[in-house]
Length: 315
Image 1 (tube, rainbow, N blue to C red):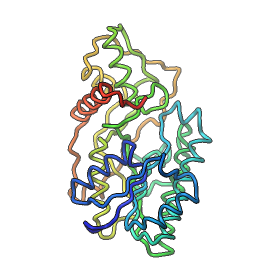
Image 2: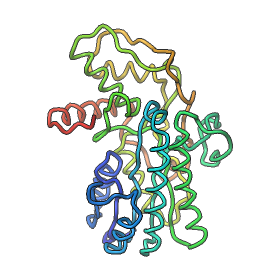
Image 3: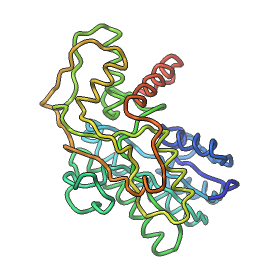
Image 4: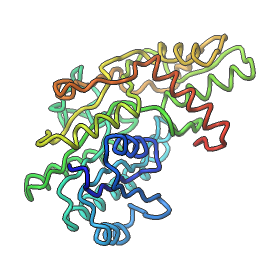
């Protein structure tokens, strides 16, 4: 990827896409195409084909997706598989037809089997059953990364994928039911602290182990992959730091100043018992995350308060 390349970032108004756009600009890449969803519906084939044909980007980053936590995935599985399959197929196919030589597809660590070996190597893909609570989303993301892999094999284009772990940071979605665990906890503990509530309830036992990656760290890793001469088809992106959901809740409570009790609703599902990515390739490049979990949660909460004050919070 060269400094003068025209780079299309799909999903540029979302948390991931906007972070990647910021990282590209700070790295000297200024010729960016950043359409909003209102400007370009990537689930529609013809508008996507027309956009690529008319704008002719040199590089494409596919960060657009329908995302959500356990509740959203369980409630809207048809939406999750249909929308994400459509985005992957339409963008990757249109990119190839318009002459895009470099494409990075953003997936998720949820593509791996529920009981994958830990830390999870990229080779664990398709070696066992998926986690049922996010199966629809995972299948769509697997299809997208396989499409990239097969285009690369058949046509010789450098289409490759990155599988980030649980992401958080500025621009996150704080919906009470449809967002991911960390933004839900930030919102829930913030509101409880404001109201001086005696307790906050969280889903499950609190025992599952998770790895979290600040979205700005994800973005710097994506720029590194785009600049790599011959990256692997699939690369895990993670912080290498894991903790239980219960420990995460305690960090969030401390960060926002909540003094009450944390109560576990064990009738709700835990999801995958442990999910830590093997980031050996990423570390071999010399890349390191800027944020640890405590500093990252502090930054995320500061961004939450700023977005709340400016009335642009996503809920």
